[in-house]
Length: 315
Image 1 (cartoon, one colour):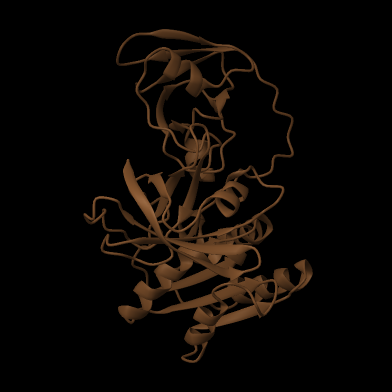
Image 2: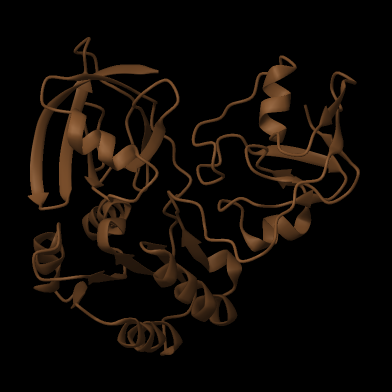
């Protein structure tokens, strides 16, 4: 963990603030790459992930937080409690949204989802690589719209302001189903409907491997997820543990003294992903791809369970 101090707070819009943090020791923090995020340890039980919107050498990290009144509590806590000069515990940067090298990259973002896309855009522009950025925002005062407008001058980017869901879907269809350059990869971050529509359109055309996304809140579930008790075996130690209905697999593992990384506790960050050696997982996370789910080789124990009476984990 890194003990950091908030060195600046900027109100970007009525509901979005930008924060810059530096190490309290004055030492450089780990360098980042496009798409990186950090965990903010807000209280003993409240940990949230935020993308860094500028690639950095570690001198400081910058992230933006939208205040969502009916959210899970992290954004409200940050907006109401954190100010310049405050100390806060953060994690080293992690990157589950890694920007690859492709013949052409299509970047799609919506609202505050522009933040990880910004660092990708800077990297692509600096290296003069082929890309296009499309930013869907609510109104002309959206945070970071000026960043996108600056790129639009050179025809790299476009803003789509105030589109209703039907118009957004039509625009996505135009962008994705049109004649994209061969071997295009798509990177998308934003509201769930935007990401879902991008996946729906992009996967048949480009393949699941070519559509990349990042979520920081759990995907909505429309299925009945009734908990059933099951048994988990730990291959490396031989331990056999009971996982009761109503108790998470992660909590059982931790309670048994198993050392396992975890952060969000909601199946979105991927820090607790664990290998599965036998049995069929009941995937309830928002992190693994459909291909990874179908393979059954990994599980997010913070939220997922078992479809079979027994799972054997690579622990």
